[in-house]
Length: 126
Image (cartoon, rainbow, N blue to C red; front, side):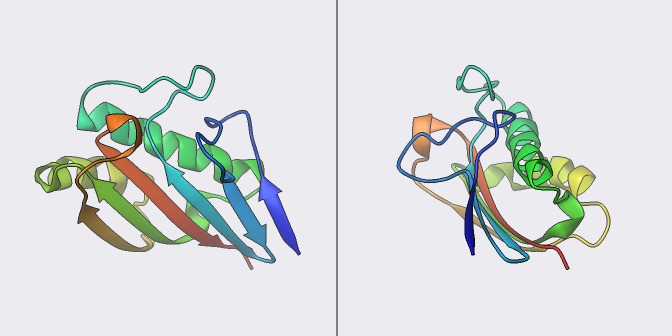
């Protein structure tokens, strides 16, 4: 059964999509950008600040349906500048320090609201 996930602890979708969709033991989290959950404004100008906020938003969505970062099996990171790869990895590794998920990281020409980073995730809980 398909379940739409919506939490006020993460920013609302800025288009016709859901924050996440749960199907059975799988959770598909839409790309998260560095928006403040209550104001929907972009958090910080630096890649470090934006990465922290994206991961906090991702974690909030997971927690809203009793998943955790340890349940994430795949992430895709979209960066405006692949030169930020090391800075992102330094922060990302703190959130996924044990059994990190599979991952892809790509540079893109532009992201919504001209942010520097977006991360989507797939999680599985047995």
